[in-house]
Image (cartoon, rainbow, N blue to C red; front, side):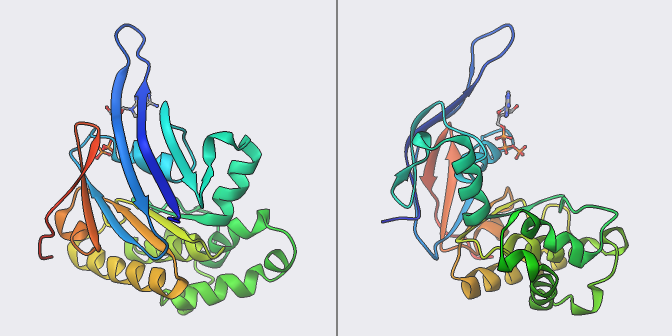
Length: 231
Ligand SMILES: Nc1ncnc2c1ncn2[C@@H]1O[C@H](COP(=O)(O)OP(=O)(O)OP(=O)(O)O)[C@@H](O)[C@H]1O
């Protein structure tokens, strides 16, 4: 059974004065545990819209989304929120760190909502994660005092701290230079393998996308398989 299973997923957005925008028109996708999938597409093709559905942030207009064989549409909002927190780690283009907090405090944020051992051990877990991403020397540095590449490492540590089975990365190298972006992608691959997590990367950069095992393209609201291109 795949970790994520999508069939015939559509998503439309209402407009004030015209017909609804049909962004996703019938997406079929299976993401297996440990999978490496990249999704490319033109600006406005619906990449972030799809990522929000994969991450249980948004729901399709029609179609099926199953996580571990369970239909997401039948879950209540709180159940979905809990499942998202326990299953999915997000990495965004703009890092989304909390400015006034240190690297370690940022990484520990997702553990504040957890119960028991993870909550009480949040400082140790955050330090371990920062060590894992090569930032043990920056644990107590404020997020604003870190370089872009370092901030993305903190964001990756934060995404990993609850041991997600799915890492969703939305343009993870978009705000970085090519060399730093390459190192960040190497790190994401490595930590996903170590954590035994599936990695879905959304990007418009074909060289970044070509690192994945499978590269898919959104064309006219549907996913197509794409020939792999050497990075
Ligand atoms: N909540 C919303 N309400 C109305 N329209 C929306 C909403 N979210 C997205 N859209 C529209 O859906 C289309 C797809 O947006 P989306 O952000 O998924 O594209 P994208 O492929 O990620 O683009 P980019 O590469 O530029 O980030 C866009 O035309 C956008 O304006």
